[in-house]
Image (cartoon, rainbow, N blue to C red; front, side, top):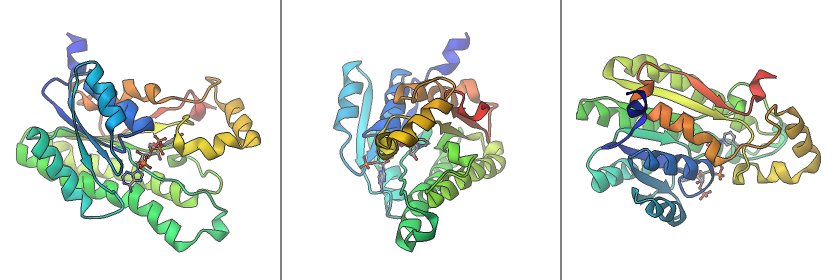
Length: 253
Ligand code: NAP
């Protein structure tokens, strides 16, 4: 039956940046759908784990700073130690630095590109190797942005990184489809999380953004949950290389 295709029983999902915001929302959804979830954070993910415990879900935590290349092995081996295999990777961790393009320090450019793009590629690569070793495919969900489609203002490194992640999603899908690996992305619209706290506290920008969202409200971590479960599940086995916007209609304007 169709709803069975959305079930994730027996699957192991790894979500980066799972301590808060969109990562927390997606981790909870994957656990509710039946997956064992590995919560990756540079800080503890106790709050997310407690929310998963509440409904009897299974999770484990891996502490890792995703600005460091050695964290790639740490994330994969931590997940394998916890649950013995991996089936779903959600590359959610990301950072944003706001500054006029003309003044962006090289160090800030590098740190955004490193976490938002380099680490995403390295984690995709490590997980794809593990999926091939396991022999039965796997899912990768990258988190893009409206700025995968648009230029944005005062966030040039963020725009460059998120645009690149949308391209990378297509490139990896092409190469790995024949190995049973689907690589897709979700592009959140304007969501009420730490990522946008600065933007939301700027009254003029906040009002201008809200006026342009057809849904008439900022998105929430819960708004990510349906798309995350779909792209993690068998229901999306013939969907590959695609970026799904969860944006309250923003891109339709
Ligand atoms: P958030 O609350 O700031 O969450 C970002 C997550 O990434 C946090 O868990 C953060 O950990 C983690 N992270 C950042 N740097 C890390 C590092 N070096 N090592 C490990 N973890 C690290 O914002 P969010 O909105 O939920 O963002 C989630 C994703 O959605 C990001 O990729 C973001 O770019 C993307 N996104 C968000 C929006 C939006 O409107 N909110 C729109 C489009 C795309 P800490 O809590 O320790 O910082």
